[in-house]
Amino acid sequence: LARQSTFASHSNGSIEILRQRFPIDDFTNITPAIVSKTHLQLHTTPSHPLSTLRALIESAYSDFTHVSTISPLVSPYKNFDELSFPLDHPGRAVTDSYYVNRDMMLRTHTSAHEVEMFRKGETKWLLTADVYRRDEIDASHYPIFHQVEGARIFNTDASGMKEVQEDNERLSNLLATANIVIEDIPHISATNPVQPGHDPVFSELVARNLKLSLNNLLLNVFGDVAGISKKQPLRVRWIEAYFPFTSPSFEVEVFFQGKWLEILGSGVIRQATLDTAGVQNKIGWAFGLGLERIAMVLFSIPDIRLFWSTDARFLSQFEQGKINIFQPYSKYPSCFKDVSFWVPQDTILHENDFCDLVRDTAGDLVEDVKMIDHFIHPKTNRTSLCYRINYRSMDRSLSNEEINHVQSQVVARLKDQFGVEIR
Ligand code: FA5
Ligand code: MG
Image 1 (tube, rainbow, N blue to C red):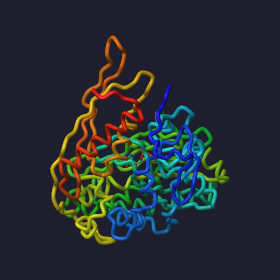
Image 2: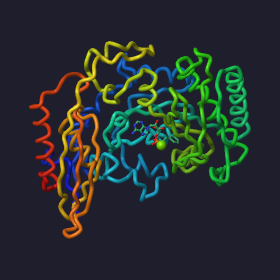
Image 3: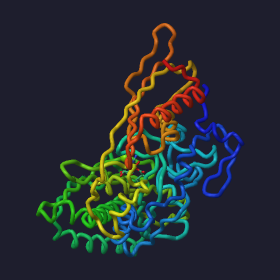
Image 4: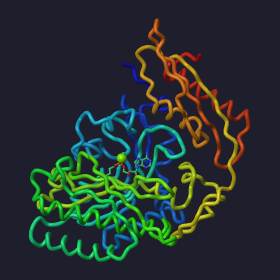
């Protein structure tokens, strides 16, 4: 089946990213719009809300190594195989991840650096970085976001057990007097099992250390703003999860402004990962937390695109180390444009391909993309799609001419790259 390149503009056989040149191939799907943001490092840009949040998290792990400048270019081996992702995992698909070529991609999560960190001998560390995923377009999804990975490993001997027990005691004392309500689940269960090679007692102690440590982190991050000032306890709930590289595994949600907010994934690290890193005699935990969703609620930032704004009316509202409520400077009008078309037979036009084409053409002028119609013609067997694009700038009013021009470029590229027939 033909999969058209969304990277038609780079036909000279190579692509430059972060001052490195790479050959392109049939996997290449990274767009110029994405490449142009790979160097921005919002999470270390002073005064940026993402940087303030990173620093706040780091301050809760002051005795850990902190890393925040690792390149997003990794091999698929590092992003997936080292972490025991099965070969047919959907995350590997070109529709879901950004590939430079078959051998190089933009990391989809900070877990891609776990083996490298452990191999260096790090035993307690935080790593903050930009991560990339092909996805839909709306106010809470952006193809680039930021994660903090945290991990801690212990010796699998009496010294390690003593270390984890002492730390559990210290952390439970800290939590004992805190205004927090935790909905917990068992550390280990039939559906969230201990790993075959692990001592169940040790694994439970490690899972408990993970939970105590993260409950304390959440208290630090949300404690002051989530209602402690209003004498409401912070509510945290632990949920059973699945990740190929941890067992048992957990997700954590925080109750904030009337809703449960998904904060992170975590678990007891799969021994295969530690073995690959050459630290066979260790056991430990890891978590991966998304910064944008937390920052959006802490700073009341209504649209994820705002993090990328260079408008002084956005940036000047923030100061490094300070959490304050964002004052929206204005909301400019939306402009909706529909495009309906027939997809040629034998062509797959994934929604993420459509969204990337729109993002690459319209940049951050696109707020939302929705498929509003989809049917297959009973006689010709052709697929008809209709997408509704909502154009709205965060910074200014858009003229009709400008929108019409962008929309006509979207249509032209659709015809050009996917051979669609406009209806
Ligand atoms: C992961 O990325 C795992 N690497 C997390 C992990 C690390 C598990 C270590 C076990 C051990 P997940 O895809 O669920 O998992 O993403 C983790 C967090 O990133 C989510 O809880 C959420 O806070 C954030 N996140 C995920 N997708 C998005 C998105 N599209 N936009 C914004 N934030 C997101
Ligand atoms: Mg998830």
